[in-house]
Image 1 (tube, one colour):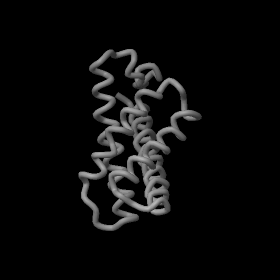
Image 2 (tube, helix red, strand yellow):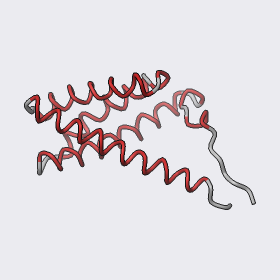
Image 3 (cartoon, one colour):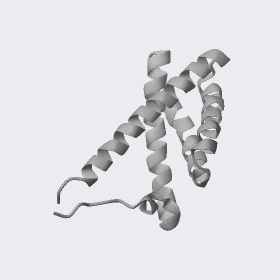
Length: 127
């Protein structure tokens, strides 16, 4: 039985060049846009998806630029960028912006862990 495994360095776009960075940016922008839209709809009600995908590229860019720093730096910086971008794009009060940002981050972590665990589970499937 052969088990497919993904090496951690295979997930680093730096090893793949500019195309890997572009792909990572597009996938992360899609991920951030969908999770932000879910969070915004939960907190604010009926909002357009365009606003979420206006904020998403900034989050994707920040996460790519800071990937080598690890979660101790990436989490607070992306949270701060998300807060500022949500405040500007959605034009909300400080408290509601904080609520949307916390819900967004919660949704992103839950969806991200689910996808990560699903991919890891698929990696253990027999070929």
